[in-house]
Image 1 (tube, rainbow, N blue to C red):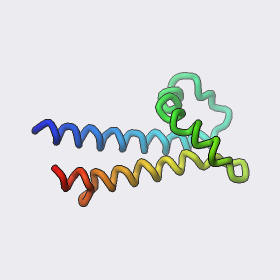
Image 2: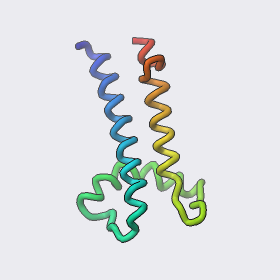
Image 3: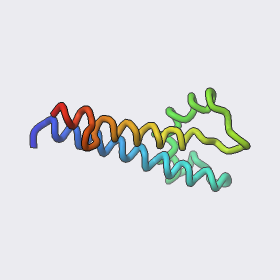
Image 4: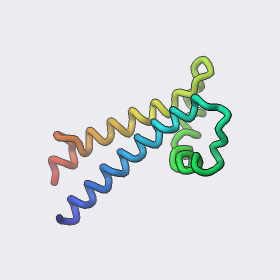
Length: 94
C-alpha cells in the first residue's frame, strides 16, 4: 500500500466515524435525562459539539426538535460520497 491509499482510507474512516457519531448523537436526543458531560457520552459529545454549537445559532429547533445533527449526518455523508465514493473526486484523482 502506498501513502495515498492509506491517506484516502484514513480519510474515509474519519468521515464514516463522524457520521456514526452524529447518528449516535441523534439517538441521545431521545433521552434528555442523559448527562452528556459524563463518560461514555462525552466520547460522542466532544467531537460533535464543535460542529453543532455554531449550527444551532443559525438553525433554531423546529417544534422543540434539534435538527442540526441530522444536517451534519447529511453533510458528512455527502462529503464522503463526493470525495471518496466510486466516482468521487479523490478516488478518480488517485
